[in-house]
Image 1 (tube, each protein chain N blue to C red):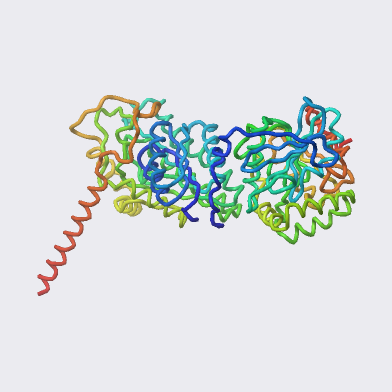
Image 2 (image 1 turned 135 degrees about the vertical axis):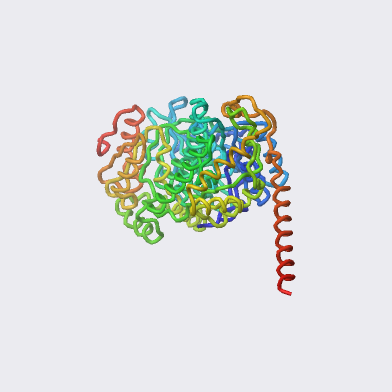
Length: 322
Length: 283
């Protein structure tokens, strides 16, 4: 499908991956319909999209409310006449030892990350089926393949999202809806504010596990999926490595990732007060794409280091040969 | 996958101006009044018949038609109801944009007109492609929907091609009142062959059956027993897919029940509006 002039709905558009995706679609000439809970943040994103010459509307939406998500779809149709792409990207997270996670918080994470996507998929597919065309993109995570400790609800929900996408693909295959595609995106660690927004009962600050990639990279993967739909796309070579590793040695990967989360995801120096994060109330403010984890700088540094290592290796090889 | 078309202009911007509604002596023989509304980037014409202040019903015409073939039905209903038959942009007395509107474009225009004339939740009676337009309202403006009567709804998903549809249209002619032929010939000429064909193409692309679950209001699927364009299996499927749908057949009638069997359709309509179960055969 052509991205220019496509009508794209993005949930979770006030920050992180959703926001980066909205801005990239706007730059590519799509009309964007922005959904999240915070109206002021959405208005800010809409203004940025319009700066790129795109048409944008902000529709404050809590994705756990099925009626609100249906209204979001109707708003897209009413303003732009069509709905071509739906990106489910609204997600929340929380970390705690299993028995210390309040049950209510656990349920809320599943509700936002799973039922929010279900509501989006139902609305999107209603319109896609009536048109015979459309692309539904569900943002999962590499944690939808390899689990993490302490973030049970999150990793469960991301596994569920992958399953939902696959199940929908099967159903579309059976009904021979060839113009409709369902794709899953599996990002590795991305530099977004989700870590600051997380519910946290560990007593330790949540940090991004390296290697960290930029949200723009995920946005590019999503826009590419609209052009060439694929089942699943991993964003970030680190994530791809982790997936391969878990295929080859699942038990070992499980243990290694557990260790890594304990050592780097949760700070060993900086304490944190117990908080339900943004589960029930959105973080105030205008929101942002990045979370201050220096995804771009880290990627650049990694690339530089890789290049340096390669050059050194070549130089060493040459010397040895001579 | 078909490439997306140009995004149409923002509908809300069209609604921003407060619409001007003017009435005039009927421009069409037999009707009581003509109403012109400046809305949806056009000057939408609607013909009305029936007592002032009576509860209203709105009629939505099919491909290439206009308000005119609703006159026999309007005359039957006019004792107790005010029947308003609207001309969609590009048809009858309503000018349309140079390029034919698709079903969504027509339904957005109909929604704008319903809002501008304060006719939200007024019962809708639609024939043929008009059914596709009315059903599409549910995708963007479900709050406008009142009870719905879908008469000879198109396009049967088992025959979504030009030759099949053309053949069925020809087969329908013997079952219609002969007076319909000159009336439609004039309406077809008004809309013009280019718009007719382009709209037909849009009709074939529209999958009405996938949208029916969005209609929460009571709806009756009516078809003439002899209607080759909307066969019985298709009518039953539509009624079954509607959350609050009923299926009614009119004996001896073809596709344009509103023109050829107005007495029976009027009876079915009244039954639906009084929330009675319309009887088989409209008896």
